[in-house]
Image (cartoon, rainbow, N blue to C red; front, side):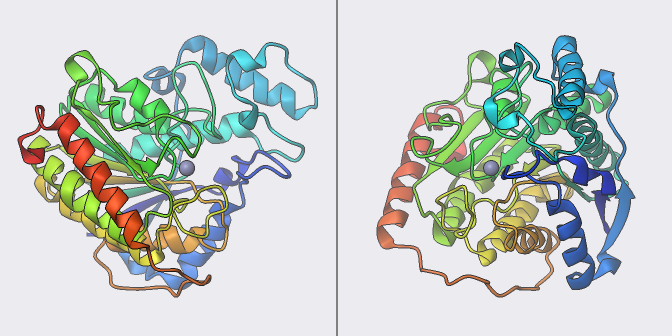
Length: 364
Ligand SMILES: [Zn+2]
């Protein structure tokens, strides 16, 4: 079966302007690389369409949605909006030359929502929504370049529209998905597994191993804070020791993975050590995890702050996911992962297991 690839030229409007690390050119850049280097027979391109207010209100308050619409329109005309910091962090303020961010954020949510629907309905086994994975946004707050949380919208729409009761969200972005974690912190129907750089060393400073959920949701948030320079072997260990066993025991009806190329060793905003082979391996592991749910998987891609790496990392993830053996050469010199980094990862894995073994037999 072909995989669906959801794309729109309007994604390029998700652009915070000159000098900001998140620019809209990442999308056409990927699209071009994808066309030139991947076999197009394996994909069906589907045009994304924007989410409605009702969709956005699955996660966000009406007041916040209204603020987003107004703020980015007024800001674009160069006028300052007083009180804006109530709803957003400094890194979500656009710079000169920014795109139509409110509209693009809505488009991303619509795209991730549709990706979930076509997989849930069995129209495609796998759907890849470009632009998705805005995991830092929460109900009334936009931060970390994320305005609206499409991961949470996609998940909650699947619960509401199809009555799904077991959804596994796997976040492999280099940063912890604090907005997604917050949304599902007390929800036992959503198992949230989040691999990210040690929060003591990077934004958003959340996602410690002891954060495991609350109330009925206790045990359903799994944070795996990786040591600096964690690379292929560390990621492989975590996928084998934690993500795979948990996916078998939780037995999800669908898997939603998000995260782009920012764990790569040459990324400019992070200090991890993943290589392109590692992205391919993660894709393969996710494919393996999805065996329990007839392969049903939604893949959301937006991050990456080395634009040379970005299309290579995204493509490696996609190819791994589809079990296609195609490799790309690393454009930057690679240093093998040090033994001490692997030992630190083993310690993290042991800690995660200790914290969660009373909830999961497979981690005991
Ligand atoms: Zn990130």
